[in-house]
Image (cartoon, rainbow, N blue to C red; front, side):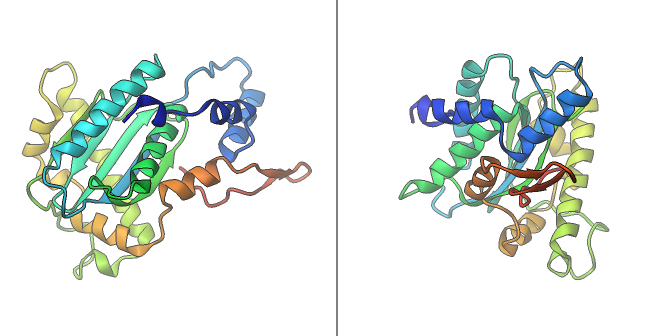
Length: 255
């Protein structure tokens, strides 16, 4: 796949500069109240979940795809470091990416482009779990992926009847809480050492988000697809100046 198909087009880049979306309105408010703050690079975190097709022979193919994509994005957006973790379960994936808004939008566009291919064999039904803006620090020191050969489960986090009895908000909150704990554990364990994150994950399987939580989230239909998120991201907003109320992209799942 050519790198140009993965990156923002000139027209989209121009739209980014104009800044009419909910995200850009938030950034303008920050500049207004913090005129001395450096705004050249803001850190954001994107979490995507998706099902894996049965015809995907080797899950490492998906890891290699994102490895190569990240390298292209790093060359294109020089200085915008990409960190995160891609977990490849037997039937689904969980991808956490930390970088600039331009990089994360490019990653969402790549997911959308994969879905538009007639015979996509890497992922199915991707959904945006959450997009967190303006983070104070990273949760990961590097980007890596891990193929999981067991369906990680955790006791005591959910009701006795399992995740199917929990509502979507509870499932999302549980997944995010476990990811934060896992990220902090990886940060402490791998900081200043050459130990790969995959080796650490082998030692703490109970800290990995259970696959059944992700399967339930993917079956609910409450989460936005990458296409829906990108459409909302680029939708102009209408602001009532007297009240400060924003009308338009209220569907964006942000933290």
